Amino acid sequence: MRYLPHTNEDIASMLQVAGASSLDDLFSAVPKDCRRTSDLNLQGPLTEWELNNHMSALAASMAASPEYKIFIGAGSYEHYIPASVSYLLGRSEFSTSYTPYQPEMSQGTLQAIYEYQTLT
Image 1 (cartoon, rainbow, N blue to C red):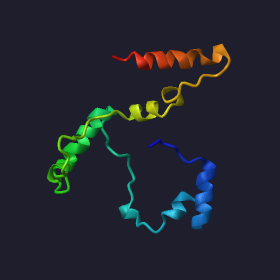
Image 2 (tube, rainbow, N blue to C red):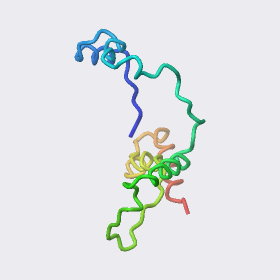
Image 3 (spheres, rainbow, N blue to C red):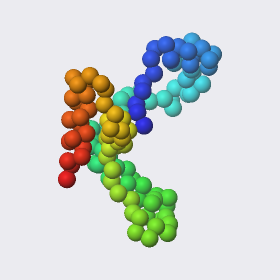
Image 4 (cartoon, rainbow, N blue to C red):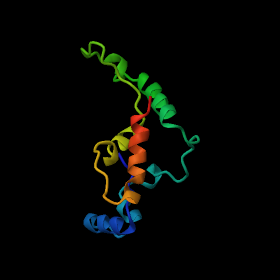
């Protein structure tokens, strides 16, 4: 899923629908002692692979962990596929041979198709 942050106009529209004048007004029902007043103490950024391993380790401590689920797969196992693969496969230059009529416009598309087809 893509990260699409809210614009200031989006936030103002949502506040209007909720009947609040500001974000502080919106969360005024939450008691002050339940609100975080400092930044979270988070470690540095992780790669997608490291984050998946970290989350799997956290899930392993819970009864709902995937290790407790058994499905008849007959050899169909979960494989790691980076998120970028889904994005790249959704690009039209990898799913159609159509190229624009102008040669200078199709140069990059033809190069991408060639590179994709010679990945071995």
